[in-house]
Amino acid sequence: MRDAASASDLDLMRRTAAGDRDAFETLYRTHQATVYRFARLMTGSTTVAEDIVQEVFLALMRDASRYDPARASLTTYLYGSARHHTRRRLLRDRFLVRLDEHADLCVPCSSTTVDDELIRQRDVQHLRRAIVRLPARYREVIVLCDLQDVSYADAAQALGCAIGTVRSRLHRARHLLADKIQRGLACVDTARQPSVRCEV
Amino acid sequence: MSEHERGDTRLARSLQMLAETEAASETPPRVEAAIMAQWDAAQSSGRLRRTGRVQTARRVAVTTAAGITVVGALVWPRGTNESVNVPVTDRYTTVAVVGGPLLADEPIRVVRMRVARSVLGELGVPSPAPQSSPSVETVDIDVLVGEDGVARGVRVPVEAGL
Image 1 (tube, rainbow over the protein chains, first blue to last red):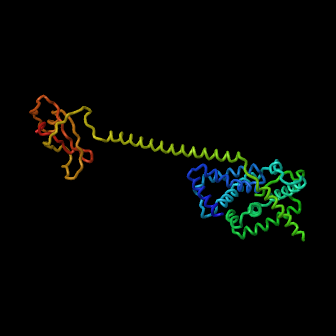
Image 2 (cartoon, chains in turn purple, cyan):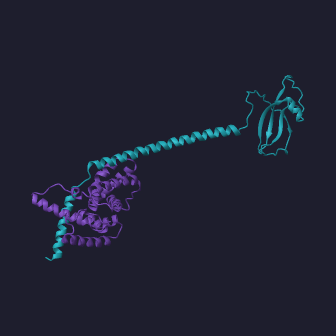
Image 3 (cartoon, rainbow over the protein chains, first blue to last red):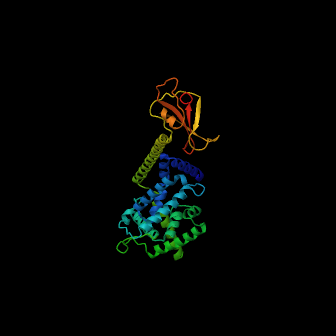
């Protein structure tokens, strides 16, 4: 299944490099959500994530002919590109403070009862804040391995490190997250914590 | 269950919830529209660049051709501007005027000139009146020019000269 997807991606990439608009559109529709979720979880911002999606796919459009399938699958390649653009963006915006992050990350109600949904949203909000406050190297592995179901091997390829490093970072990241949640550092009380700033 | 284990369980549950929440999130259509607009713009500018390259190549070709024409016109040995009916003859006498003798394999250029018959006298070449037309005051001669641009000799048709 994965091989079939890779073959399809490879064909689409070749056609994109040759200037095939439909191929590029198909690539975008297939992979946009993956890039978008990664960027959204990494930055904690919908608007920044949208910008990063644009940057990633514009880079893909420019460099389609340089993609080497022998080095990584397209998904891994896109994660690597998204990571690069996310880091650049966070570095650039490190002195900015977002004012609307609460409205930005609201999710539609899908639970059966209002109470369930409130509890769920509160917990999710806590976790989002805690993740965003993690150092980038820990945040990346949590987002990739725990939230995006990326294998350790693919995560290592996307992050440019060894699998063992991914494992150890993941272990450390989970520990930090549990600690933050337990100590209530990711509280959504806006009076006490008016803004969230991503660790770079 | 220890505090640590409870924390891990709670974290795992929260991560699961967040992953489920995120699973449905996608970029809004405006992002796709913006990206495809960029694609179209890039492709059209690519075509323009290709068209521009073709035009540049054409300009270079035309300029080169014009340059070759101009240089050729300047360098090419000029005859008289008049239309001249030069009598074809294979009988010549050659008089060396300057420089050394022509070498056997020395490349030369032949410049045909129409000069006054009296000029031949000044060069020491006897120029009796031609038998065919005594009233003709000019004569067509060939100047043999060496590779260095110096005239090596003058070739005079037998009929006009000796």
